[in-house]
Image (cartoon, rainbow, N blue to C red; front, side):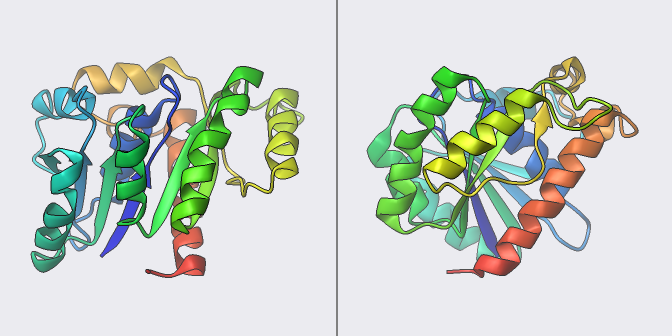
Length: 215
């Protein structure tokens, strides 16, 4: 079983939206997924209550109970567990980092967001957790390539030695619209640019997991 933690100490990074979409796209009949809602705000659970499908599975649990949930999930044949973490609980994030094979750290490309992302990166480094930063809620791609603010954000992250996913996820209304009905964008609008971006990001995350290997 592969365990992916979506973590950011800064609110507004799009952490839960990303966790929900990754868990949904990871799910398949031969590769079941589990979404763990360890954020006291319960946004992932709010989404799941509106969902018609019973997959991916969801477990809402406090940080202290995640290890047991993961053990049970592995025993029951879950292939991928995605953890949505609390944003302002540094000790809790560190505890979850130690359980993860890979931490995805989402950040918007703005200067205030980039200034704050270091706090989460420091936790990943302290716990020796493989991690990668995902640029999230960016302007959509242009005909001549990625927006300049995305390129500039990559440069800032590179300057602090933080690995960055080559794919990024744009700010698109359809991502929020899909959540209202308990769906993910690959279900709500499967041919949309947003669905293509999520699929591309997930494909890259899987490659990163293969490179890091399960701990």
